[in-house]
Amino acid sequence: MAENVFILGAGASVESGAPVMDNFLDRAEDLLRNDFFKDYSKSIKKVFKVISDLYSVYAKSYLDLNNIESLFGILEMAKIIKKLDDYSQEEISEVRNALVILIVKTLEKSIRYPKGKSTFAKPTPSYDKFVQLIKNIDKNSKDNNQENKVNNSAIITFNYDLALDVAFKLNNIESNYCLNPDSNYGVKILKLHGSINWAHCLKCDDIIPANISFNKHTLGSDYFLTCNSEKICKVNHKHDEINEVPLIVPPTWNKTSYHGKLTNVWHQAAKELGDAKNIYVFGYSLPKSDSFFRYLFALGTLGDSRIRRFWVFDPNPAVKKRYKGLIGRGISDRFDFKEEYFSSAIDLLNKELNNNNNESFGW
Ligand SMILES: [Zn+2]
Image 1 (cartoon, protein in one colour):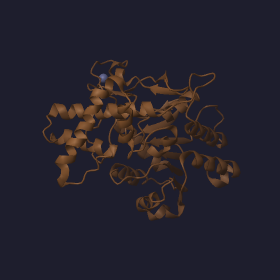
Image 2: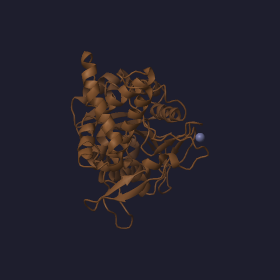
Image 3: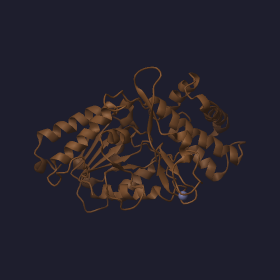
Image 4: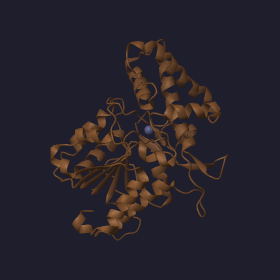
Protein backbone atom coordinates (compact mmCIF):
# COMPACT_ATOMS: atom_id res chain seq x y z
CA MET A 1 0.00 0.00 0.00
CA ALA A 2 1.18 3.50 -0.75
CA GLU A 3 1.74 6.00 2.03
CA ASN A 4 1.10 8.96 -0.21
CA VAL A 5 -2.08 9.31 -2.20
CA PHE A 6 -2.32 12.04 -4.81
CA ILE A 7 -5.73 13.05 -6.09
CA LEU A 8 -5.80 14.88 -9.41
CA GLY A 9 -8.72 16.80 -10.88
CA ALA A 10 -9.24 18.65 -14.15
CA GLY A 11 -7.28 21.62 -12.78
CA ALA A 12 -4.10 19.51 -12.83
CA SER A 13 -4.25 19.19 -16.63
CA VAL A 14 -4.93 22.87 -17.34
CA GLU A 15 -1.23 23.76 -17.54
CA SER A 16 -0.87 20.97 -20.12
CA GLY A 17 -3.51 22.64 -22.30
CA ALA A 18 -6.71 20.84 -21.28
CA PRO A 19 -9.89 22.87 -20.88
CA VAL A 20 -11.73 22.79 -17.54
CA MET A 21 -15.29 21.51 -17.27
CA ASP A 22 -16.89 24.94 -17.59
CA ASN A 23 -15.13 25.93 -20.80
CA PHE A 24 -14.84 22.48 -22.36
CA LEU A 25 -17.75 22.97 -24.73
CA ASP A 26 -16.50 26.44 -25.75
CA ARG A 27 -13.15 24.90 -26.66
CA ALA A 28 -14.87 22.09 -28.59
CA GLU A 29 -17.01 24.63 -30.46
CA ASP A 30 -13.93 26.65 -31.44
CA LEU A 31 -12.17 23.51 -32.67
CA LEU A 32 -15.29 22.53 -34.62
CA ARG A 33 -15.55 25.98 -36.21
CA ASN A 34 -11.91 25.80 -37.29
CA ASP A 35 -12.40 22.35 -38.79
CA PHE A 36 -10.06 20.58 -36.38
CA PHE A 37 -12.37 17.60 -36.00
CA LYS A 38 -12.37 16.68 -39.71
CA ASP A 39 -14.33 13.42 -40.14
CA TYR A 40 -15.82 13.71 -36.66
CA SER A 41 -17.46 17.08 -37.28
CA LYS A 42 -20.79 15.60 -38.33
CA SER A 43 -21.05 13.49 -35.21
CA ILE A 44 -19.88 16.29 -32.88
CA LYS A 45 -22.43 18.71 -34.38
CA LYS A 46 -25.16 16.40 -33.01
CA VAL A 47 -24.04 17.29 -29.48
CA PHE A 48 -24.49 21.01 -30.09
CA LYS A 49 -27.86 20.31 -31.71
CA VAL A 50 -29.03 18.47 -28.59
CA ILE A 51 -27.83 21.34 -26.37
CA SER A 52 -29.91 23.85 -28.31
CA ASP A 53 -32.92 21.48 -28.26
CA LEU A 54 -32.59 21.02 -24.50
CA TYR A 55 -32.45 24.75 -23.87
CA SER A 56 -36.00 25.16 -25.09
CA VAL A 57 -37.38 21.94 -23.62
CA TYR A 58 -35.93 22.33 -20.15
CA ALA A 59 -37.18 25.84 -19.53
CA LYS A 60 -39.04 24.38 -16.57
CA SER A 61 -35.97 23.16 -14.73
CA TYR A 62 -32.42 24.26 -14.19
CA LEU A 63 -29.80 22.31 -16.07
CA ASP A 64 -26.26 23.52 -16.52
CA LEU A 65 -25.86 22.76 -20.22
CA ASN A 66 -22.61 24.70 -20.45
CA ASN A 67 -20.84 22.26 -18.17
CA ILE A 68 -19.57 19.15 -19.94
CA GLU A 69 -19.93 16.90 -16.88
CA SER A 70 -23.47 18.04 -16.31
CA LEU A 71 -24.34 17.43 -19.98
CA PHE A 72 -22.69 14.00 -19.84
CA GLY A 73 -24.76 13.18 -16.75
CA ILE A 74 -27.98 14.29 -18.44
CA LEU A 75 -27.33 12.09 -21.48
CA GLU A 76 -26.51 9.10 -19.28
CA MET A 77 -29.70 9.59 -17.36
CA ALA A 78 -31.65 9.95 -20.61
CA LYS A 79 -30.21 6.61 -21.71
CA ILE A 80 -31.35 4.96 -18.47
CA ILE A 81 -34.86 6.43 -18.37
CA LYS A 82 -35.14 6.20 -22.18
CA LYS A 83 -36.44 9.72 -22.49
CA LEU A 84 -35.01 12.86 -24.05
CA ASP A 85 -37.51 15.13 -25.73
CA ASP A 86 -38.45 13.60 -29.12
CA TYR A 87 -35.27 11.60 -29.45
CA SER A 88 -35.56 7.88 -30.07
CA GLN A 89 -33.56 5.44 -27.94
CA GLU A 90 -31.18 4.90 -30.81
CA GLU A 91 -30.68 8.65 -31.22
CA ILE A 92 -30.02 9.07 -27.49
CA SER A 93 -27.26 6.42 -27.70
CA GLU A 94 -25.86 8.11 -30.79
CA VAL A 95 -25.66 11.50 -29.08
CA ARG A 96 -24.13 9.98 -25.94
CA ASN A 97 -21.42 8.36 -28.11
CA ALA A 98 -20.95 11.61 -30.03
CA LEU A 99 -20.32 13.39 -26.72
CA VAL A 100 -17.62 10.86 -25.84
CA ILE A 101 -16.01 11.50 -29.23
CA LEU A 102 -16.24 15.25 -28.58
CA ILE A 103 -14.45 14.81 -25.23
CA VAL A 104 -11.77 12.51 -26.65
CA LYS A 105 -11.03 14.70 -29.69
CA THR A 106 -11.08 17.97 -27.74
CA LEU A 107 -8.54 16.59 -25.27
CA GLU A 108 -6.39 15.19 -28.07
CA LYS A 109 -6.34 18.53 -29.86
CA SER A 110 -5.82 20.60 -26.71
CA ILE A 111 -2.95 18.90 -24.90
CA ARG A 112 0.35 19.40 -26.63
CA TYR A 113 3.54 17.54 -25.93
CA PRO A 114 6.82 19.36 -26.62
CA LYS A 115 9.20 17.92 -29.18
CA GLY A 116 11.82 15.68 -27.61
CA LYS A 117 15.50 15.23 -28.52
CA SER A 118 16.08 11.55 -27.95
CA THR A 119 12.42 10.64 -27.73
CA PHE A 120 9.77 11.67 -30.25
CA ALA A 121 7.92 13.79 -27.71
CA LYS A 122 8.44 14.91 -24.13
CA PRO A 123 5.97 14.87 -21.27
CA THR A 124 4.17 18.16 -20.63
CA PRO A 125 6.32 20.20 -18.17
CA SER A 126 3.94 20.10 -15.19
CA TYR A 127 3.34 16.34 -15.35
CA ASP A 128 7.05 15.73 -15.86
CA LYS A 129 7.67 17.67 -12.68
CA PHE A 130 5.02 15.59 -10.93
CA VAL A 131 6.73 12.34 -11.95
CA GLN A 132 10.05 13.68 -10.60
CA LEU A 133 8.31 14.42 -7.28
CA ILE A 134 6.99 10.85 -7.10
CA LYS A 135 10.51 9.57 -7.83
CA ASN A 136 12.02 11.85 -5.17
CA ILE A 137 9.57 10.66 -2.56
CA ASP A 138 10.54 7.09 -3.26
CA LYS A 139 14.25 7.87 -3.24
CA ASN A 140 13.81 9.34 0.23
CA SER A 141 11.97 6.30 1.40
CA LYS A 142 14.26 3.97 3.38
CA ASP A 143 13.12 0.63 2.08
CA ASN A 144 13.38 1.29 -1.59
CA ASN A 145 16.66 1.01 -3.47
CA GLN A 146 15.37 -0.08 -6.84
CA GLU A 147 15.54 2.47 -9.57
CA ASN A 148 12.31 3.39 -11.32
CA LYS A 149 10.29 1.45 -8.79
CA VAL A 150 7.74 3.77 -7.31
CA ASN A 151 5.57 2.07 -4.76
CA ASN A 152 5.27 4.71 -2.10
CA SER A 153 2.69 6.72 -3.99
CA ALA A 154 -0.65 6.00 -5.61
CA ILE A 155 -2.51 8.40 -7.85
CA ILE A 156 -6.27 8.75 -8.02
CA THR A 157 -7.36 10.82 -10.99
CA PHE A 158 -10.66 12.07 -12.36
CA ASN A 159 -9.09 13.02 -15.65
CA TYR A 160 -9.83 11.28 -18.92
CA ASP A 161 -6.73 12.64 -20.63
CA LEU A 162 -3.36 10.93 -21.01
CA ALA A 163 -0.90 13.63 -19.93
CA LEU A 164 -0.12 11.81 -16.66
CA ASP A 165 0.08 8.36 -18.29
CA VAL A 166 2.45 9.69 -20.95
CA ALA A 167 4.70 11.39 -18.37
CA PHE A 168 5.23 8.06 -16.59
CA LYS A 169 5.69 6.18 -19.84
CA LEU A 170 8.33 8.61 -21.16
CA ASN A 171 10.10 8.43 -17.79
CA ASN A 172 10.23 4.64 -18.19
CA ILE A 173 7.97 3.96 -15.24
CA GLU A 174 5.32 1.34 -15.68
CA SER A 175 1.74 2.40 -14.91
CA ASN A 176 -0.72 0.07 -13.28
CA TYR A 177 -4.36 0.97 -13.97
CA CYS A 178 -5.48 -1.72 -11.47
CA LEU A 179 -8.11 -3.02 -13.90
CA ASN A 180 -7.57 -6.47 -12.44
CA PRO A 181 -7.79 -7.10 -8.71
CA ASP A 182 -4.59 -7.50 -6.70
CA SER A 183 -2.24 -6.58 -9.53
CA ASN A 184 0.86 -5.29 -7.86
CA TYR A 185 3.35 -3.65 -10.17
CA GLY A 186 4.36 -0.16 -11.29
CA VAL A 187 2.81 3.03 -10.08
CA LYS A 188 -0.90 2.82 -9.44
CA ILE A 189 -2.87 5.22 -11.62
CA LEU A 190 -6.49 4.90 -10.63
CA LYS A 191 -8.63 6.57 -13.29
CA LEU A 192 -12.01 6.68 -11.56
CA HIS A 193 -13.87 8.02 -14.57
CA GLY A 194 -12.14 5.92 -17.23
CA SER A 195 -9.68 7.00 -19.86
CA ILE A 196 -9.71 8.03 -23.50
CA ASN A 197 -7.45 5.06 -24.31
CA TRP A 198 -9.58 2.39 -22.66
CA ALA A 199 -11.51 0.01 -24.86
CA HIS A 200 -14.44 -1.89 -23.38
CA CYS A 201 -15.54 -5.39 -24.31
CA LEU A 202 -19.32 -5.66 -24.24
CA LYS A 203 -19.16 -9.43 -24.02
CA CYS A 204 -16.88 -10.08 -21.03
CA ASP A 205 -16.71 -6.53 -19.62
CA ASP A 206 -12.90 -6.46 -19.85
CA ILE A 207 -11.25 -3.06 -20.16
CA ILE A 208 -8.34 -3.09 -22.58
CA PRO A 209 -5.96 -0.10 -22.60
CA ALA A 210 -5.03 0.82 -26.19
CA ASN A 211 -1.58 1.89 -27.28
CA ILE A 212 -0.79 5.58 -27.32
CA SER A 213 0.78 7.17 -30.37
CA PHE A 214 1.87 10.67 -31.34
CA ASN A 215 0.93 12.76 -34.35
CA LYS A 216 2.87 15.82 -35.37
CA HIS A 217 1.06 19.06 -34.82
CA THR A 218 0.68 20.92 -38.08
CA LEU A 219 0.85 24.42 -36.61
CA GLY A 220 4.14 24.15 -34.76
CA SER A 221 6.77 21.85 -33.36
CA ASP A 222 4.61 20.44 -30.57
CA TYR A 223 2.84 17.13 -30.85
CA PHE A 224 -0.72 16.07 -30.58
CA LEU A 225 -1.32 12.74 -29.06
CA THR A 226 -3.85 10.22 -30.19
CA CYS A 227 -4.89 7.00 -28.59
CA ASN A 228 -6.27 5.72 -31.88
CA SER A 229 -9.72 6.35 -30.49
CA GLU A 230 -11.17 5.90 -33.97
CA LYS A 231 -9.73 2.39 -33.95
CA ILE A 232 -10.50 1.69 -30.30
CA CYS A 233 -12.75 -1.21 -31.31
CA LYS A 234 -9.79 -2.84 -33.07
CA VAL A 235 -7.72 -3.43 -29.91
CA ASN A 236 -6.18 -6.83 -29.47
CA HIS A 237 -8.70 -8.88 -27.52
CA LYS A 238 -10.22 -12.36 -27.54
CA HIS A 239 -13.71 -11.07 -28.42
CA ASP A 240 -14.91 -8.86 -31.27
CA GLU A 241 -17.66 -7.13 -29.28
CA ILE A 242 -15.70 -3.99 -28.41
CA ASN A 243 -17.63 -0.79 -27.81
CA GLU A 244 -17.07 1.71 -30.62
CA VAL A 245 -16.16 4.53 -28.20
CA PRO A 246 -13.63 4.62 -25.34
CA LEU A 247 -14.75 3.89 -21.77
CA ILE A 248 -15.27 7.16 -19.93
CA VAL A 249 -18.01 7.85 -17.43
CA PRO A 250 -19.56 11.04 -16.04
CA PRO A 251 -19.04 12.01 -12.38
CA THR A 252 -22.72 11.85 -11.43
CA TRP A 253 -23.70 9.70 -8.48
CA ASN A 254 -25.29 7.04 -10.61
CA LYS A 255 -22.55 4.79 -11.85
CA THR A 256 -24.67 1.67 -11.61
CA SER A 257 -24.54 1.07 -15.35
CA TYR A 258 -20.76 0.73 -15.10
CA HIS A 259 -20.26 -2.43 -13.14
CA GLY A 260 -17.62 -4.91 -14.05
CA LYS A 261 -13.99 -4.10 -14.25
CA LEU A 262 -14.24 -0.40 -13.43
CA THR A 263 -15.27 -1.38 -9.91
CA ASN A 264 -11.78 -2.89 -9.47
CA VAL A 265 -10.40 0.61 -9.94
CA TRP A 266 -12.85 2.10 -7.42
CA HIS A 267 -12.14 -0.68 -4.95
CA GLN A 268 -8.39 -0.07 -5.16
CA ALA A 269 -8.94 3.70 -4.75
CA ALA A 270 -10.92 3.08 -1.53
CA LYS A 271 -8.15 0.78 -0.29
CA GLU A 272 -5.48 3.39 -1.00
CA LEU A 273 -7.47 6.11 0.78
CA GLY A 274 -7.90 3.83 3.77
CA ASP A 275 -4.16 3.23 4.12
CA ALA A 276 -2.90 6.68 3.19
CA LYS A 277 -0.72 8.62 5.56
CA ASN A 278 -0.64 11.73 3.41
CA ILE A 279 -3.30 12.82 0.95
CA TYR A 280 -2.54 15.60 -1.53
CA VAL A 281 -5.22 16.98 -3.80
CA PHE A 282 -4.46 19.04 -6.93
CA GLY A 283 -7.03 20.89 -9.00
CA TYR A 284 -10.03 18.88 -7.92
CA SER A 285 -12.74 21.34 -6.96
CA LEU A 286 -15.06 18.76 -5.36
CA PRO A 287 -18.12 19.58 -7.50
CA LYS A 288 -21.49 19.14 -5.83
CA SER A 289 -22.51 16.69 -8.59
CA ASP A 290 -19.79 14.27 -7.52
CA SER A 291 -21.45 12.57 -4.57
CA PHE A 292 -19.69 9.41 -5.71
CA PHE A 293 -16.34 10.76 -4.55
CA ARG A 294 -17.78 12.00 -1.26
CA TYR A 295 -19.05 8.49 -0.47
CA LEU A 296 -15.85 6.87 -1.71
CA PHE A 297 -13.81 9.17 0.50
CA ALA A 298 -16.00 8.63 3.57
CA LEU A 299 -16.03 4.85 3.24
CA GLY A 300 -12.42 4.60 2.04
CA THR A 301 -10.96 6.54 4.94
CA LEU A 302 -12.78 4.40 7.52
CA GLY A 303 -9.52 2.41 7.98
CA ASP A 304 -7.26 2.45 11.06
CA SER A 305 -4.56 4.48 9.37
CA ARG A 306 -4.07 7.95 10.78
CA ILE A 307 -3.88 10.71 8.23
CA ARG A 308 -0.99 13.06 8.88
CA ARG A 309 -1.65 15.45 6.06
CA PHE A 310 -4.66 16.31 4.01
CA TRP A 311 -3.43 19.10 1.80
CA VAL A 312 -5.49 20.63 -0.97
CA PHE A 313 -4.01 22.83 -3.69
CA ASP A 314 -6.34 24.89 -5.82
CA PRO A 315 -6.05 28.43 -7.18
CA ASN A 316 -9.71 29.06 -6.37
CA PRO A 317 -10.13 30.02 -2.67
CA ALA A 318 -13.84 29.06 -2.74
CA VAL A 319 -12.82 25.40 -2.96
CA LYS A 320 -11.53 25.44 0.62
CA LYS A 321 -15.01 25.59 2.11
CA ARG A 322 -16.18 22.54 0.15
CA TYR A 323 -13.33 20.45 1.57
CA LYS A 324 -14.04 21.64 5.07
CA GLY A 325 -17.48 20.15 4.59
CA LEU A 326 -15.99 16.86 3.36
CA ILE A 327 -13.47 16.02 6.05
CA GLY A 328 -14.35 14.77 9.49
CA ARG A 329 -13.35 16.42 12.75
CA GLY A 330 -10.71 13.72 13.30
CA ILE A 331 -8.47 15.10 10.59
CA SER A 332 -9.49 18.75 10.53
CA ASP A 333 -6.22 19.77 12.22
CA ARG A 334 -4.30 17.92 9.49
CA PHE A 335 -6.08 19.84 6.76
CA ASP A 336 -4.35 22.63 4.90
CA PHE A 337 -5.45 24.56 1.86
CA LYS A 338 -3.08 26.40 -0.43
CA GLU A 339 -4.04 28.62 -3.34
CA GLU A 340 -1.63 27.14 -5.85
CA TYR A 341 -1.67 25.89 -9.42
CA PHE A 342 -0.51 22.34 -10.11
CA SER A 343 3.13 23.08 -10.98
CA SER A 344 3.70 25.57 -8.15
CA ALA A 345 2.13 23.08 -5.73
CA ILE A 346 4.63 20.45 -6.87
CA ASP A 347 7.50 22.93 -6.36
CA LEU A 348 6.23 23.53 -2.85
CA LEU A 349 6.08 19.82 -2.05
CA ASN A 350 9.53 19.21 -3.54
CA LYS A 351 10.93 21.98 -1.36
CA GLU A 352 9.24 20.50 1.66
CA LEU A 353 10.70 17.11 0.83
CA ASN A 354 14.23 18.50 0.46
CA ASN A 355 14.02 20.61 3.60
CA ASN A 356 12.74 17.98 5.95
CA ASN A 357 14.17 14.91 7.42
CA ASN A 358 12.22 12.02 5.97
CA GLU A 359 11.42 10.29 9.23
CA SER A 360 10.43 13.27 11.33
CA PHE A 361 8.19 14.71 8.70
CA GLY A 362 6.39 11.55 7.79
CA TRP A 363 7.10 11.22 4.08
ZN1 LIG B 1 -14.17 -9.75 -24.04
